[in-house]
Image 1 (tube, rainbow, N blue to C red):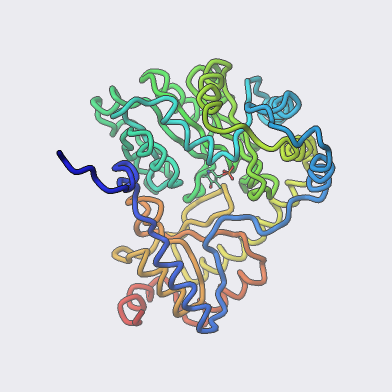
Image 2: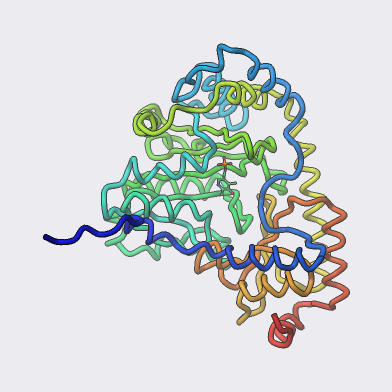
Length: 402
Ligand SMILES: *Cc1c(COP(=O)(O)O)cnc(C)c1O
């Protein structure tokens, strides 16, 4: 009799890319232990608290026993209504909506719902790591869409081979874009939706940064493109818009059929979001919009401090009007992981290496603007003191030890 293999992780789990940030975490901890004062631009998690009004609404709902029972899996009628009204007021879009436990959870289940084994999933590279992971976990195959600076960090559809187009079922897009900060115009969104329609591909728009842009342009949705609801599902998140990352609340928007198909699968997996949190979410989406103007002003100020400082050092900053990230190109030949390590150990500054977002992110680094302005001033001051202007970076990388 053949021996049964020992208990072990599935093959698909072993196909997940290694966690590239583990080594940096170690460096960070070691540096902190040595007493180094670390200025941490690493993680994009808003440092400002959830607005009081939302917290109070959540507390009241928490105290109500009616909310202590199983929630409605797709979201309560009032929450879904609040989402529909939000889509209408913010984007002038009429659509169906349903609750997700943060957009990350929603995104992670997409290939499982829409792909068969071996189907192709088009994913932006660099990109949010969940797109790739979700495809792998569904036994689908991720195919990179390189986002290049010369194309404004938009995918070049002309470069996709016809054989790939035939097998592609899903395409993830994310604008305003993490990590590059790129945004798209309505014309560009229209072309992307058209591409998806012609090729029979579900376009999954990750719109978690809809309200974080600095070019004065109003927030946009792929569902604004006429007829998009047949081929587009769009994820919205309260995390970044309302400083609610810890609450785990978002929603999916699109045509009735696509939303229904998606939620039909989710019914088998989770039982929805705690109703008290949905109540808090309703309050958030019904609030006066001056609140997010204020939050945006905070990010704008931080962004200016960093961008001005790096410009003085002649660093190569990508034109990135969206998200609270600043995407910076390193001199040719610089390895972003090595760079990140040296920044921790020699400047006490934590940034994210571009390679953590995919192969096409190599040669870049990302700063998250989720720390106070005075810390950003300090960071710029350190770089100035070290005279780390662009022309010296490569030499500095070669010369300094770890
Ligand atoms: C932060 C982030 C999310 C996660 O949003 P949640 O709603 O908190 O799960 C999704 N996509 C991108 C690109 C993000 O940066």
